Length: 267
Image 1 (cartoon, rainbow, N blue to C red):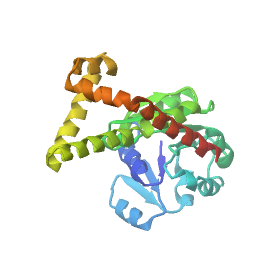
Image 2 (image 1 turned 90 degrees about the horizontal axis):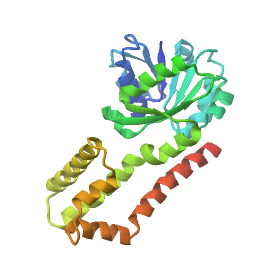
Image 3 (image 1 turned 180 degrees about the vertical axis):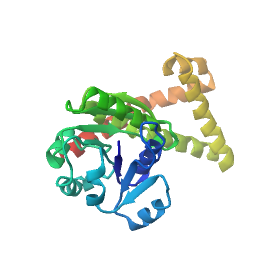
């Protein structure tokens, strides 16, 4: 199998590098297509990946075409791809909002997988949700899942509604965590801690809390009850969050990302 990754941005290059290490693919079976001459010059130094700037030179060679460009580039890209593809090729897209039906119609290939990764894929700790058109066989899906798993974990969802929904949770989710971390670091600075100590206080707290959660069957609410005691410091913080409706605001933010993903598909 030869895989073509179109777009060598953060996520495209992350998947190209991760998939190149997969046991499924033989050496130099990863190709990258990118418009940027600067990017191609940098990637040409990689011995395990072939780099291209013309679709005609690589699209016909690919068994699997991995689309990692911004959604607003999709229309032009589809126009360039359509005369070059052939029956049997599989498209995997990580473009937010671009539907399977749109890709089938505009590219002319029935086998399409739509996926939503997140930023921790860059360190092998990502979560990618995915779904596929009915033309993709079970064996093909297993192969695709193995490739997606090279960047972390995957979940197969029932339909595209859940791809848009996962955009609001896991896709955009790391930014919510960073937002919370930034606020806590600013509070630490205001309390008099140094920048380095503020970072350590917050990052280790998040790391430890996530590990506690992952290594047990307890819910977040149960863990909060273990930390908080009546009349104590943690209860004062949690009461402040509840009084300020933080729980609902976080859910509203997640739904805002979800709704925007749906809008992108409609646009």
